[in-house]
Length: 214
Image 1 (cartoon, one colour):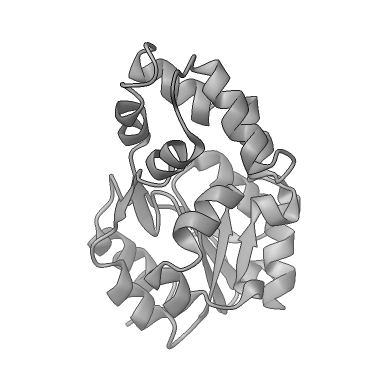
Image 2 (spheres, helix red, strand yellow):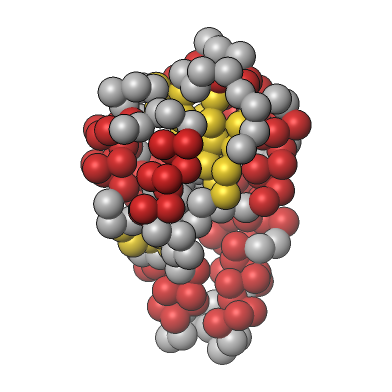
């Protein structure tokens, strides 16, 4: 375990951390509109430059939908159908609510997420997990709002600044190693956690090691 100060804040990614997701749910819903294979659709919609610009708030929702609809050679795909499919990829991380309940008694909670305005406004902004545990704007460090994507150190420093702490007083959970490495580069503590691969018990063990949960 990393050397650290007393943990004051625990920070979480959203996708595959607070909730699970499966991008192929979206791809399967595109079958009536695109002849491309699901793997190609996922790459073109979520893994290419348009999506990264969308997550940074550079591309607006209408332009993004128009561009990726063209990229996947969609025919007859309305914006409403696209948005429904786009926001249907998430599923619950069973047990995370109990973890957050215990955590908030000993530490402040923050989000650091690469996320598009569309996913935030159409799905997460009013999600019970967000409303109950991350309700204040200062708790929400979102890429489309700040203009930076993880692992850019600026988004991590923004989170630490919002929390009013030193980096070594924060513990960050994310499902990608490059983001863990990025948080450590600014002096913070970070641990890999992928809710589609790791159990809640594994998360609890880690939190107990850092003495932020009983």
